[in-house]
Image (cartoon, rainbow, N blue to C red; front, side, top):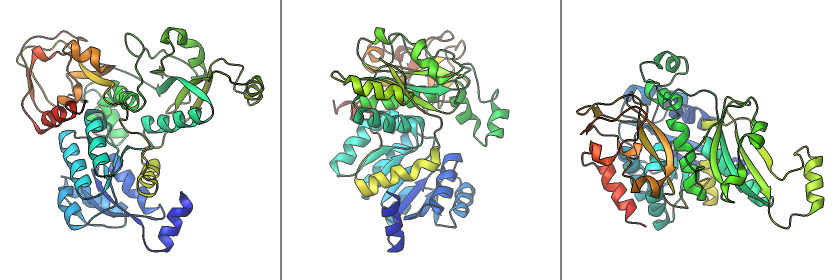
Length: 405
């Protein structure tokens, strides 16, 4: 891949990239593309003009605008990177990029979860790629799963590693930590209360047709990632691969997969795996001690532009979703806006068919203000009969997505 990009650079024909979102991740992408041969950041869009201009300076200066649709029209690109923290607008931007012939890389896991199947279908219709980012946990796990399948293993569990969780965190309570990490308080809150973790794992699930264990992901506390082999009851999975996570395990920031050899795996291969320090089975642990977010985004860009390939996309459809739960006792009449990273809700992954049948509310649809019709006790899931959801472009796109199946 790097040699092909170097060749494009030498020919003066780099992959042209457009970027929307000049927050922490967008700034990272702008910085990284400046140092990636064979790629050129053509422009940056953000509703905050100063943020866009600041990110453009990191890239060595490029045009900016408040709305990427203006630039898609005037300055065509090969790949469009969506790095906002919106959902409805992000989907509109992605669809506009497809209309203008650009592949789409989603650094935005929220829109990936909310409308990944629809965006994939629209990309397929145009012979364009819509892909998750390569450097977020779900993208790294997708690459690892591809590898173990290539090596002759079956997936048992795909796992994330989370350092700290506080489901009751609010933007106000986490503001100090957010400032240290140069994150918005809302973004940091979604990390801390576990919503982002559950969204990432749901996106992965929708790529490979995975489910959480019965009752939901368990997230046992562990000192080391190797404890994954003993902390989970893999026999209870019934042969179906699952998603889960470890809490507090080293290496922090990493991800892992547990796999078992396919039927007919030769004894000599088992001997060699033991020789390679992977143990005697029947379950084997493979882990990566890091994920590098924006540093790895060029891999997703190149996969789409050069190979016509996605790192990860919602190929299995909407198998899982992440549903809103009350962080505290919520009262009738209260309004919930942008529930992800809010003071009112946290999200937990559930199989979509079961949760939809119970009337649970996906957290991704709570972007516009929605008023509670009745009280919801702490930790209870929000249900549609407790909410008055306003009509929005996001809900219209969700209905269009539902019609695909």
